[in-house]
Image (cartoon, rainbow, N blue to C red; front, side, top):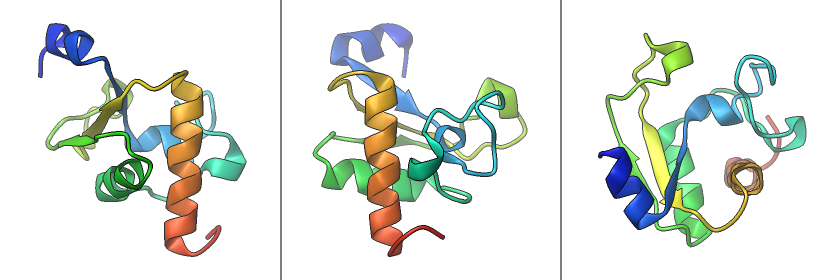
Length: 102
């Protein structure tokens, strides 16, 4: 998906590393520790965003520039506010889906 199309649809990208509790903020984690999870998967991010009504779209085979060798993909969601708030809400929902902090 091209950048122009994303702007037109008003979507933001959520990479798994944004929610990974094994990473520091310096390494790219955006979620606070309380809303981060161990080894988040794009499928979990997709399901959590779906439950939150964010109209997610999964894009596979893509890699975040900081982790170019990990082609885990990304999830596009509707831009419903600040990115940090959206990432926190998705992380909290994943924790709920997993049955608590693991």
